[in-house]
Structure formats: structure tokens, C-alpha cells
Length: 414
Image (cartoon, rainbow, N blue to C red; front, side, top):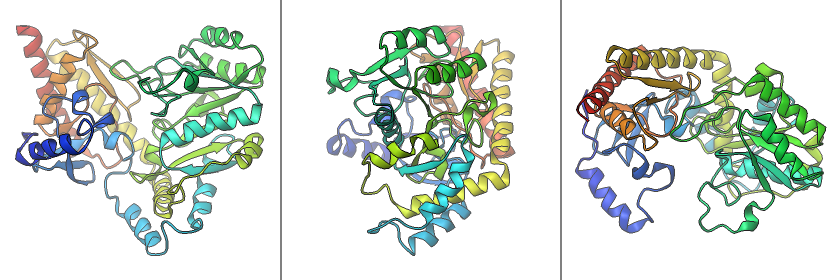
């Protein structure tokens, strides 16, 4: 299947959006970051696929940038939401399903004793830092260089509109480098409140990096030694590395962990889960939002976790993702093209060895894949959902072959 991504309806919407909205479609949906000709507006989604406003169909390997884990419009999730919505979504008090969800989620997380719910990943990463400072009475928070923890002033990669005070109590370290963590701690003697870290390094446009056991265990030990909290940002990795805590394999439990994206299969839900020791601070600090208490999203979250557990969805996603990664390597090797594939099978990413940091070859690759009905992003890691089947895999790898052919043609002709 070959598609044309920018038809009349899409172009008309682009023109209207440019007038009505700053930059038109912006943020992580920005066309400037995506492949040339990528669709900017999606009209419909179901299962593993999406359709743009011009009727072009794609296998969506962005999964709405991570939230879709079971597939779009999963019938059991949608039924759970409909039942909840018929009772109450946004009311003057919390819906009972909030307690049900907390009771399901908390035992899944290593060391978990309580949960708070919000809407976006930025909500709960920011809340985790606030609670760490309230709990310890200290100020400094360490953040990995190049890490993304949201778009609020303290963590936004774009510093425009921020003031020095927004980041005055932050310092930085290199992922997988305990010496750099130690050096950062020494710069703030007696004032370390927390270290916040993503369990897997996933920088935009560059290779993904798995944590070493030495780093995971050592970071936990450093936090304990300095009476600081270890915070895991599981917003992206949650339910995609492990069905539970990402560093469970290392025997390392965070004091708090921030969750979002996949935990509600596309409904707006985020969670902060913490250890018993931090409960008092979590109860004391005022944090809320008008829509944090939405019963619909919590019903979706509960259904999503129950289905993933029942169906062993993560195993299926890993199997599909492994075959997809292997297919990319095979397609490149068959054409004599050097490719680097990184990331866990559920969140793969690929770049070409001949490319530079602009990822111009990835633009060519993903644009050609898009023409053949596969939606990838040239600079962000991709996502696998449990809705993807063998038919999707065959079509995806056919698109990959076309994409690699386009790269081969470019590198041969210059």
C-alpha cells in the first residue's frame, strides 16, 4: 500500500491551524521535527492503525507517542470507560474507581505503598521533586544530562521564558556514570534531596542506552548514603520494560516513581507511586488539578492493567518488536547499508551509520516508510502495541525495505 500524506484536506487544515494556533501544530507533534510529508492531523484510529484526514492508512509505530499499549479503541477498555462515564467522570468528589486503581497499581511497583493520580507525565515528575524536597528538607535534585522529564520550566529542554531560579537547585550527571553522580553530590554537601533518572536512556535522535547493573545498584547506594530519594521517571518506560518496576531485574526499588503514557491506553492519566517512608510528605503537600480526578481515565487505567496482566501483553510486544528490529537489520545488511538499532524491543529506534546528527537519512527512510503505510518518526524512539500482529509485521517490514532502498539510493548517488 502506497500513501500520499498531504492531500487537500490536510493542507487546508495546516493553513487554518497556522492562523489559529501558534506555529500551527506544535510541541512534539511539530511537522518540523517529523518526516517530510508526514500527516499532521489524524481522523481515525483503531487497533494498530491510524488514518489521516486524507484517508491514508498507517500502521502506527508511534502509538500516539507511547500511550497506546493495547491498541486504539480496545473494546474492553472502551467498555470500562463507558460504564464509568454513565456513572460519573468529573464530579465534586472522587469516583470509587480511584481506590480500585490504586489498589491494583501500588502492589505492582517495587516498594510501592501509595499512589497519587494526575494527568500528564510533567505533573508527576514535578510532584515527585516537590515531595522529595518536602520529605528531606533539602533542595538539590540531580538530573541526567540530556534527560527529558517534561515541559515545565524546571525540566524543559528549551530554556526560553525561564529564569535562572527555575533551575537553581538542579545539578547534572551522565547516565551510567557513577563518578559523575558522585562529583555532582560533592558540589552540594549535605543538600541532596533526590536523584531523578529515567530507567533507560532515550535521547532524541541518538542511540538508546540500557542501564548497567553497576549504575542501577550504585545509584541506589549513593542515594541511601546521602539520605536522598531515588526517583524513577517511568512515564515512557512504564509497562514497556517490565510489567512493574523497570529496575526490578537489578533488585533496585525507587523511593518514588512517576508513571503515565501506557498505563491507561490513551486516556489522560498519570500516577506517582511511593514508598511508605514518603507517605507523610505526600499527604502534607497540596497538589491537585481540576481534571486529575477524572473517573473515566481511572477506569481506563484499571482495565488496561488488568488486560495486560491477563493476556501477558508485554511478552507479545517483546516478540513482535524483536522481529521488527531483526527485520530492519536484515534489510540493511542485504543492501550493504550500515544501521544501528537500539532500545528494548517494545521501544526500538534505528539510525544509519552514514548519517550525521541532522538525521537526514532518517528523514528519507521514515518518509519512504510513510509512503508505504508505516508511521515512524525520524528522531524519536518508536513504540510497539499488543494490537500488532503478523500481518502488521509483514507490511511494516515491506515498508522498511522500501525505506532502506531509498537510503541506499541516496548514499550511492550522494
